[in-house]
Amino acid sequence: MNFTIVYATATGHSENIAERLHQLIPCSELKDLDYIDQTKNLTAAEALICCIPTWNTGALEKRSGTSWDQHLENIRGLDFSNTVVAIVGLGDSAAFGKYFCDAMEELYTAFVKAGATMIGQVPIDDYIFDFSKSNIDGLFCGLPIDEDNESEKTEGRLSQWVAQITSQV
Ligand SMILES: Cc1cc2nc3c(=O)[nH]c(=O)nc-3n(C[C@H](O)[C@H](O)[C@H](O)COP(=O)(O)O)c2cc1C
Image (cartoon, rainbow, N blue to C red; front, side, top):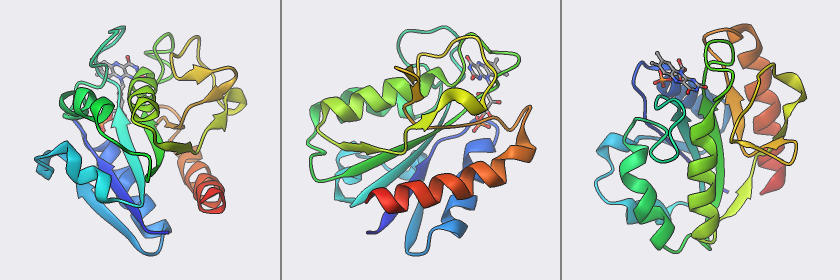
């Protein structure tokens, strides 16, 4: 299966993680969401990996604060039933431990509504945080990455997760 890795970023962490995933996954494509003008272009992908940071702390809607927020409503109204989707959330579990990677869940729920097959959920056990909207019944709905506090764990988390998602498709 061919993966298309799409990222939006404010300070570069999500872009860096997307590039590292691109290195780890043969036959993957890398795209900056800012250069995708129509949300429906995303439906052409066989499998999507969406890298999304959280900036709008505590917000109910438009939690990312990046261009993902402008695509959410369109995603909900499109048909992603032929697309497999995995999400990577960038966040800070120390300074924003009550809102850790909250934007992941908003994007996850949008793709669920659009009929996508969601993969890449991970156990919460490896993370220290107070609360996260992305914790759904004891599993994060995607892979949280914390470059602000735990960058030493990122390499292991990425390689383990790539093994997981490539075995799930
Ligand atoms: C003002 C501000 C608000 C933030 N809000 C959150 C938050 O609510 N939850 C979270 O997990 N991280 C939060 N972060 C941390 C960023 O999401 C984190 O640094 C991330 O790696 C940024 O990714 P980017 O470089 O791709 O934009 C915040 C950071 C700042 C400076």
